[in-house]
Length: 491
Image (cartoon, rainbow, N blue to C red; front, side):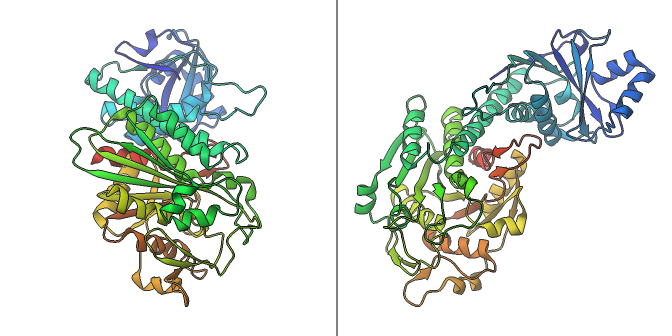
């Protein structure tokens, strides 16, 4: 991971391999780029035209160094409209990170040019830069990591508190690390990552961070009557786990619980999926998001007590698997008729929510899961849905998502949809009809939260990407980590 520095000198005087400078919409040169334009004269506009560069976010053009600058190369980067602030800085940072991975020393003027509070723009740029450079290559014989060692952020002529900016850089680095950690876990094939792997990773974190870990194995889950987690995992020879990670700072006045879905592979069970099985290793993205958030919490040390719960199992159609029509007894005593074994996530999550209510006694519960394809139908593959029983807490999550640069949208939780999951023989079914599936799944979870304030985040869409776009790379995205950390800090 590169080291980030602040420089008060002029960008033209920075000796580096690549100097990244902003181009605003319409081809207008920003800080640093103006010197390039002056040195190149009329040739500058012709180069932009030849590259069809209009200053839109994501655009870039690499030029050889010019006489007015010490940089060996200059990277022109589209940043959109003037005054884009943190959002523009994050996108531009990702573009620069992706384009400069082979360069040892990089410098940029982008944070000072996009406007907004200096520390916020710098943090967003750093976060975008690191996430844009992310690569998952552990299974490639010739895999290579970025070679960047230093990134210098030039702030010539801009007044700001250096201590605040250094703190912003440190925070952004940690949040990016937590997101990358979640991506790594989610990208690992299911053959190499099983429920016990979550427990092992949690114990590894606790060795160096102020976290404690407790793991419930299958015998302890049976003794505690965690029927949802056990039921989902009973068709696999890889037994389920409930992993609890605790952070308890002195003087904390609030206690939040994060509950993550950790289905390490989802075949659908006896209701076998008919497509998309190749990426069902990523059905543990919610659990990975909780792990990434707990890593960040352990390093940032907010004055909020946090309990991270990963409800993890493998959903397989083995000879002992749940049958459609079976009735199971959940943690807390509610009975559930299995309408479809592929609606398994809500079963493990419900047990985790009851654990958070009864054992952790959290003030508020936030669950995060790749829960429903219905959410993708509603919001597409870039936004996550938010539902819950407390509007104040929902508003806090939505605000945190906006600040973190993640797309989130609230869906209604209509009480009269509850009858869709009524059962003739049990307290409820685990699935309703084909309509409003994201809402009925949330209504199912609501039954287990009781009177505790609770928010549900469905990341089925944005947990995985098939394209590279700004800070998002192909494969697992670590969706939700940045939002969870920002929300916890806001408390």
